Image (spheres, rainbow, N blue to C red):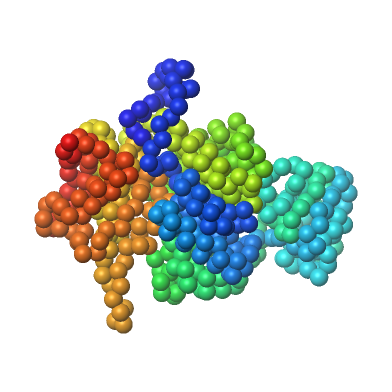
Length: 527
């Protein structure tokens, strides 16, 4: 994966671009989050998605009830068993999302320059003259001249399937708009986005809380994707809510930045959240098109320096209906990787797309190619400079392990960890080789029963770039007085050999605790 590392700044022999790439055991260092739905919920398709490189499954509660999502999750568990590929679970909240319910599910055609009324009266049928919406405060939030966007849920941005409206007048609770482009809207649910307008609704709705406290608790979700995060307090309140639910106190919160409010408070949100999802679909409506790239690059950089995963959405929309991405989309995926993104999130492409498996493998291949030209040296120096001196003990060990691995051309870094923090810090420095995170379970008790921790920590690293977890036997401690911690190391190396990550005579860098000290070791495998 790292032996043929190129740099874009150096001359590349053009003919070499056409040479086929060697497939590695890990499809790519960059992770892929797949949204599961109608086209991606059978055991057969899910197994293929896992093999293609999906490592996080996103369950979107804007669509479908808990029963529907539970059936999908049970199928995912079966697929994990048969493929022996780990996959974590992300629950995506609906949040303060404005929607139009099209009960009849008949296509609705709108003509440019016609007028349409948005009404909070949800008893009305959706038609080309009136759209019932789920919010009674829109008339108070908008004024004449404001822009409103309506598209199919998880819209792909096509002009013929989404519509721009301009507010003409407010009549009581109703908002009368002028249609700016002709379009035909299909499906049962349309999403509505009012550009740069504050929507006075809670970030965690009562429906979200009910779903989290039932479905979320029952399935011990690994990640909570907090839709429409606008302030740091949104994350704090969500965390307080999770902490009351016992098992979910370990669930990581990913703040979804979807509008100008979230962008304005980005630094404070990043401090509170465990990771960030850049929701470029809605953000692309709030921001002028020429500013979208700037926000992405700045946000990903800030996440990288904080050592928190950055997830980018809406990359290959055209693959919802096509087998190949556009040239712009293929370049966009690569640029996201070069920016430092941890994971690519697929929405409509896997939820209702015709080619969920092909989409995952295509995105994975693009990521793998981009990783080959990622300027790790520059990134490493920039990160060390940002962290500054004196470094914390753990940060110093992590950066030293990465530097050593690159200098000796190690094929893998093996990190023994209980909480997963040490492994995540190593991944922060973006080594060119995979980091095998060996999670050593710890015994804990709630005074009623004993249980092992570890599974959560292992699954939660599945969204971090370059980090590949392995759950160790709980009989082996993470800290060892025996400097070699032979038994666990042998298991890890055997796993590496079986998966083709390491072979005879390879060098391996090991990061572990020995007594009170943290140690970085370099070993060379025998023939």
